[in-house]
Length: 287
Ligand code: ADP
Image (tube, rainbow, N blue to C red):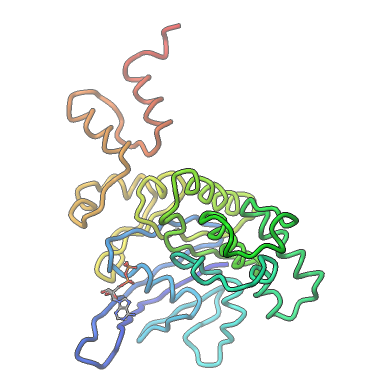
């Protein structure tokens, strides 16, 4: 399922003196199966942009197409689009409401009129995607779970609709390192094995460097950079000007190079850095 924006402009409070453009002439295409990292300083328009992907916000001008369907047309049925483009907002656990995990995660499928048997199947499957056991949790109150589990139950509620695209806004915010790793691994698995297109909004350069194939960098309502992780993190100076960094390990490689070690700086992960340092030092030959 592809998403295409053409020349999208959007302002909050349009027509009032406080109106300001949150998106200015944004055009982009996200292809089926991509894993896109969306980064940019606070206020650059990331949240506004993703809310155009399923029609929660409509452009003041410009077009939005999801699988060729024009969301800006008045008679477009957004319900189906919202099932296909799942949104996980920041702190999604704040929107948990069900008395039980089954009720909560099953809300979407139940609303869609599915049979109880199908609902249970969807809930079981969605919980498994986020590493939770249906039998253990189905009758528990979501409010009594740990922070990380609540977050995963909330994500499962979106997955129960079997979306083709999953858009996540800071899904690891506020979690401890182990919780962060688990959620990221699950998202990666959904992409790699479930074939889901993923758009990950994050402040973590480490996370996008590790997981995203493509990075889109927003700045003041426009797309400042769009390319592979290596292309974008190759523009360290440009990112710094925007108040953004590169992954720490990439920064380290730049530092080593500045100190005269002839390393490749096109490095995004610790494993790549390790291999490169071993290569440059000639340690690989020693036994
Ligand atoms: P980001 O997600 O990158 O932090 P946002 O999309 O939230 O950026 O914000 C883009 C711009 O729109 C900012 O200038 C922000 O202040 C403004 N903005 C965001 N939400 C609202 C809102 N509900 N009402 C008015 N202005 C908003």
